[in-house]
Image (cartoon, rainbow, N blue to C red; front, side, top):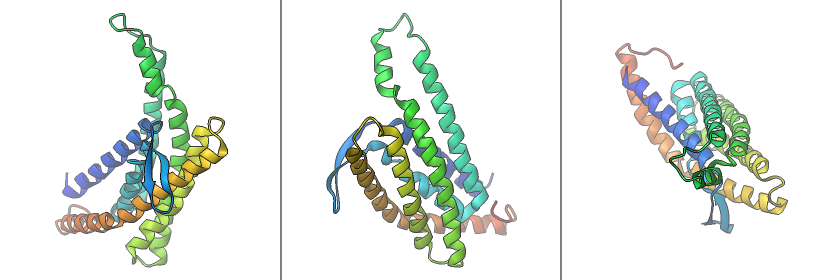
Amino acid sequence: MTRYDWLFLVLAGLFVASLVLANAMVFKFVDVPLPFIGLATISIGVLPYPITFLCTDLISELYGKKRADAIVLTGFVVSVYMLGLLQLGRILPVSHLQDEMIQEHYMAVFGQSGRAIVGSMAAYLLAQFIDVRLYHFWRRLTNGRHLWLRNNASTMMSQLLDTTVVVTILFAGVWTWSQIGAVILASYAYKLLVAAADTPLLYLGSSVFRSVKDESRRRGLIHEAA
């Protein structure tokens, strides 16, 4: 296996790990200071989630749209698998070797995971596929120039959609609409900051990965990005 293939696996693994962690962490909230907003409430699930967009942008840039779409679908399958196992854990009885309180602890942590994962999957599929397509739209429009533009334009637009959909599905009927709107605003503001901050990482990753790609192509190990 070439270094070019190994790098794809690293990006894919980072993508899936960030997605799973975002689903698992979604129900804990913290107050953080944000520019122009002040003290705001966000889910800690938004901490790893923007990394998924950086990964798909790098995969789009270096391996092409087909592989980016494939990793988005892989993330969906992993989320369904995670949902199934968590629901199975809810219905299986606690061992006689453990205190029955373990079931209450499990439910406290994972009891709402079904709604969380269903909501995040709906938002995730919509936002990620739009992100990949917007990325390639801006790439074609600029003839491959202005990496910063396609990275930020695609991510910022798709993350607005993602944030609105997932927070609404998770908390409609649980929180007031003003609370939901405040969390959407705060979460999106955080994601905008991350999207802007990860642009240098995208340039660095593209530079490093392209050198590996060019080396593999010179050695005849690859031809065109899939």
